[in-house]
Image (cartoon, rainbow, N blue to C red):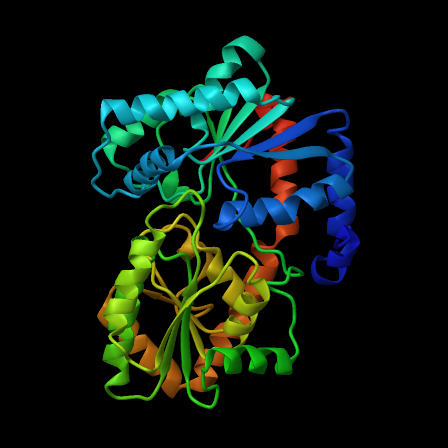
Amino acid sequence: MLRIEEYAPIVGQATIYELFRLARQLEGKTIQNINSTAVGGGVAEILSRMMPLLKQLGLNARWDVIKGNEKFYAVTKKFHNGLHGVPVEVSREEYDWFLEINRQNAEELDFADIVFVHDPQPIGLIEKRASIGRNWVWRCHIDSSQPNKTIWKFLERYITMYDAAVFSAPAFEARLPIRQVLISPSIDPLSDKNKELPEDVINATFERYGIDRSRPVITQISRFDFLKDPLGVIRAYKMAKRSMDMQLVLAGGGATDDPEGPMIMEQVKEEADKDKDIFVLFLPPSSDLEINALQRGSTIVLQKSLREGFGLTVSEALWKGKPVIAGAVGGIPLQIRHQYSGILTHSIEGTAQWIKRLLSEPEFAAKLGANGREHIRNNFLITRHIKDYLLLFLSLFYADDIVHFS
């Protein structure tokens, strides 16, 4: 287990002292995070890295995962897509089933002083507030800037019962009668996914998958989700490859609360159409070192999302000094300043053109990566994220100090 003092060489000793000072003011309070999956996806990853550090700061922090079945997660996947603006239909029976599962979980959970609920899946737990009180915060990790109106109207009834709502980017602000707080996600620079790796480890990973590092490698690492646009990635690669040699790696896994993953992966394999230079890799949750190696060994990293809550794979790649081409959606523009710390793209054609340009101009590509790394160091590391959460928790007891969207 990493000690929080090990982050001092990266972020400075003063930052570590500040975290301890803030944490001391929460002495005696129990903080409870609740989400829908222990593995897979950015929420579980952030919580798994953050919980040990919160405890080292002296906080009584815990993490609970709600229970659900296939039917429940099929409904919540509709909510997820609907918040992203995808047209979906949810029946009255499905709404009722969603609430029933939340109520069952609410009866089994022991709620803490601060209840921090992540995303739509456990949002209905707030019904318990009327009988038990507590301080409740809802955290939305999804791009909710243009939500399906029906889905949003249903969820809004529960969001407004919380003390505060936390969003990842200013564009996700909603008209709500409760306080709204902007807290961007983060990466852990010392995790297996982001720590420095010896060159032989990187080479061994590429050899294991049969990828030739002597030729350009374009990589996207994401869950197999149509909103990550893996089919668009393949089409952009095919356009760019008409004039330049390259290989494409599409690597990712799934999450226990996402039933669409296997279907999307099959579509990706069909689109690849036996191209020997396209590598479609399904990576289990324990593949952090492989992901790290694939990103570090790639020439360019893509994140061609159509909608995105934040897209931490962008921060991961930039932290490794890689040039990144990403969709100009959700929280990605917070991580990339176009043509300075990366490239923002709006189309398949644009993505293909930028791939060719970065391969043709390696010095420009390297400068993007270097600028990107410093931007992540200053804004999107886990120590900043913890500080923001500590200030949020403190503000629950001093409501007038909570930070509002302007």
